[in-house]
Image 1 (cartoon, rainbow, N blue to C red):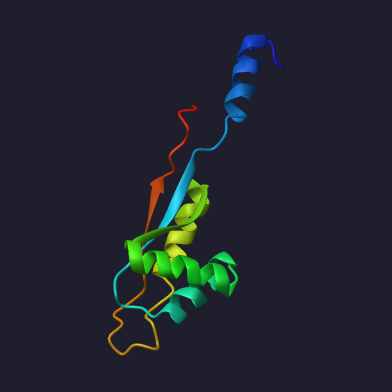
Image 2 (image 1 turned 60 degrees about the vertical axis):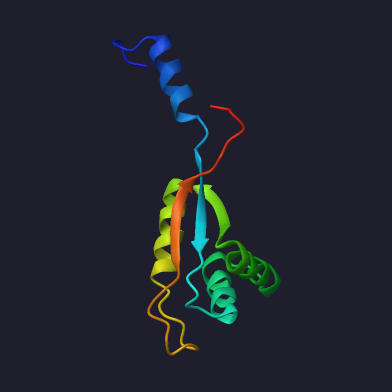
Length: 113
């Protein structure tokens, strides 16, 4: 600690460094432009999900229009959204115009701040 810092300054800096990161949801949106096989493969490739989990998430997207596919810190969420958007069109559908749509949204916390 240098001469211009006080113990309270150091404690405040330490407490700021240790605050938990706000969780963010990576949300996959339905677009009727991709097959289940594409979605399952994309989720496996990007998120490392086994086929069974990929199928469940693909079904949720299909039936509910969206699915939270991961809850992570913001920087990783931004990377995952970019990876989904960069995955490309579904080669099994001639009508596929591009990648799946995905977005990042704050995860709900139980009122804890």
